[in-house]
Length: 474
Image (cartoon, rainbow, N blue to C red; front, side, top):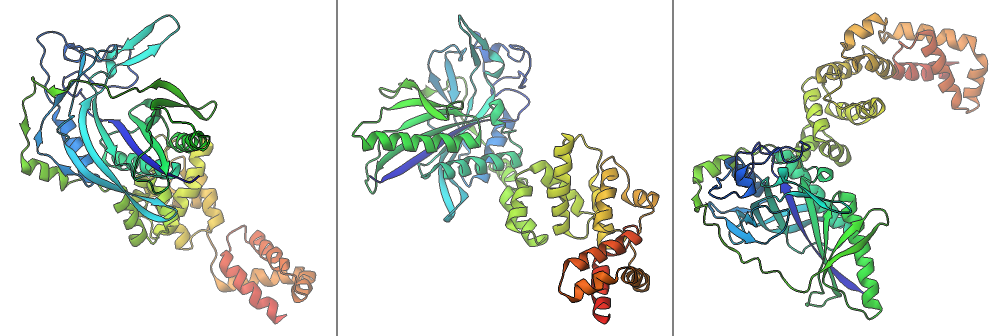
């Protein structure tokens, strides 16, 4: 039987503020347990929350980038439940009054561009982190109160690929905005997927299953694909899908049951009494919206229009913001953006991987790489020589000084190259016969001999052209 797949995604993303959502306690990943928490985070009697202005700014930036309407009247609600990761016994959130609503994000699919609707974006505080051991559970309250935005998509996705593309695009957007470090492996961005199947064409949704806390984009796709297969098989065999929460087991590449959902939990929401509604200044909001940093789609289009890059090269650069920012600096010096892209994507990325380094730890400067590219373009050195020079440029050395020290200078003088060619042809009569007999490899051999005599300094393109002309004369 054929089924329609219905997928919606909820993403919790920690905001990159210096302090908590409602207190002055510092936010920090990896600090000693329970050292970044204060009385407000722990809900001590008599303490009062104060809204983090920077968190509101970041939320407005995210809403704008996701094409959402921004509510300038900020209201918070109290979500009540008792659990060890919630020290106050309630969470301050925006259940009824999200700061952002009715947005969208465009993703690329095999069928072309697809628009994924976004229902809401609201601000809230994070919970504490629990560590479950055999005999006890330990709680680290450092994370309690960390500013979060929750972004809820509409159920517009229909496959694992689309779900992964949406999460990837959203993650990329938030990272370029600078509102979060979006490190899924560290928990600063957490992904919950809701998925259900229904008979093809049916207007009635099937039973929804939630997959919690997916910690990588690849796992989003794997979990969804597995769940589609699992649910399809149950329906084909006449079974029923249980409404439940599942998790993805990386070891078995399957989803497994965490808990059943017999009904919706009543959190007894009510307006947060300790935070009065806040009317944002429309000019302040407008100033934030008009001064967003360049977003990935904008940068991608600029690379293709300004530098003549293809979509593949543009996407490779955009997917790594550090590399993309470095490329921007290289292009301020280099005369050709396409060649600069090739060097950044191939030679530079390869060197980083080989050396197990990052751009921030490397001695290489963008100005030096740009200058090296210009030396190739100006025919001062050959491409082969440039790769040799590059090894020293990686250590922070000036490419012109390196080339001079190595005695490198590309020979582009026609008479000088012709003299070398004729020497090589006189020494290799058999290669001339091979060429006349249609053996194309003879040309490559002869070019190699000319390059050898010139100690690698002859212009390769010019050598090839002049050699072919001389061969036809003999």
